[in-house]
Image (cartoon, rainbow, N blue to C red):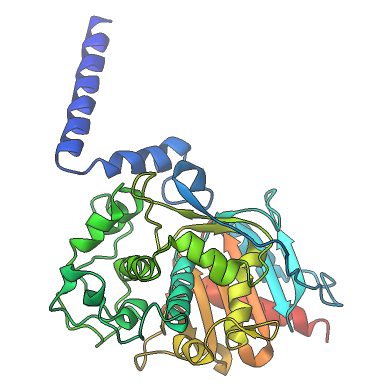
Length: 381
């Protein structure tokens, strides 16, 4: 018994020392990561994490632009393969939107069309949408405006806001999701995100090649906030959430309640129907109900690959699957808003996991959600 008491004292002492060391060397964000992930019974990021962070509210407007239901709404059953993958990967929302009407809609595990879950990196597409709006509103000159116009820390670097959006920034950033010591982990859990980003250096020639770095979008969000003089949640609300008639308020995670800097690279909590609005907006060349909400030239640029052979435009992933021009919003756990303009089709999937296997820069489940949507629609023709 005495030995056990002594061992416990030693363990408590060691833990105490580790905590002190973490604070001294500015690794205390790891403690928050442990609390948010492991103390909630998870092993990695999860879709319902927003209550564990500070959040800013993206306010909806006074009116909702309801999605109409297609005449064939939910008249088809999911295919066997779709049912299997939805179960295996924990799909909680799957929508097929055909000709701007909801053709099929399914929710699981007590989630509904109002349930909020984390967008993860789909937020990068939304941040780029805000860039387009800031250019349209005259707050930012163009995609070619230097980042140094807004942050002198990047004086001498040639990185532009367009380079940030298209993942060609040249920043000294390592996109790692497994190491607790990675800058990606620090960005997600630290309480001073601006300090983390402004300590970054441009170490490669910007504007030359695609390199997916969350830090690029975070810096872009900071530029937009500085250029507009508004928190990102407020600018998003007035620029898109209200004009597009979103049904529900959404949340955007912040670094903490003092700095109140939104995580532009991730972490907007909303529902499948409201996320889908951005797919429709970009499919329709920036128009919503006849109003030019976003410049059509910007939309066209954002949804085409910037670099030959690269799967990315400006804030959107690009694919030519099935010989069709496809663009998509994408999050790390298989959050997708997939847009196929030539067929006036939008497929939305939200869930707990994605396939670990990658084909042509996309998780393999990405293609399954497309294939099975076409299979289901063919069964009604």
